[in-house]
Amino acid sequence: MCVFSFHPVKSITTGEGGMITTNSKKISSKLKLFRNHGINRDKRFLIDKTKKINHYEQVELGFNYRMNDLEAALGISQLNRLKKFINKRTKIAKFYDNELTNLPIQKPIFTKNSSWHLYVILLKNKKIRQKLFNFLKRKDINCQIHYIPIHTHPFYKKIGFKKNDFPNSVEYYEKCLSLPIFFDLKYSIQKKIIILIHKFFLNV
Ligand SMILES: *Cc1c(COP(=O)(O)O)cnc(C)c1O
Image (cartoon, rainbow, N blue to C red):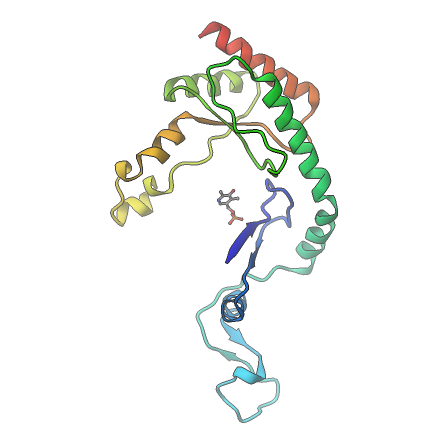
């Protein structure tokens, strides 16, 4: 299976929701059950074969994961703009890539084949990352941290995971910083972000 998120921050959105693709008919049928309270209306698979009128059967414990028509309509119109969205994000990524040079940071490898959902830089250590995060925040630039390693959340801790089970992901988490990248990001604001980052490293 392959899963896609259509949350508002993603390449295209349906408000909330997503999509699952699979080349397995069996998995597809099961997913359709889960989407609709575990209810089957397909005559071929009814357990009660007595041909009751408008019969349906709940055969699994499912949920209501149905996408409504309004969300679907938004998704279809978003598809027409996908290329435009990705081009803009690529342009933003390219600008960061060109301008964030000679700094003690690790940039993502620039490639035109990325949809540039995020632009994540790595700092030398946790302390510098925190300082840069705060510095930009004071200048009204909100960065993000993607993500808190899943095994360090209370639920996974409770089932036995220890912080040091995945040291690389913890190290990455401590050094990473996601710079603003979104369709409406203005050239002038991005320029300001770049200048601020250079300024920051002049003073640390
Ligand atoms: C967006 C995103 C999610 C959450 O997607 P949902 O639509 O809320 O299920 C999870 N993980 C990553 C890496 C994401 O980018």
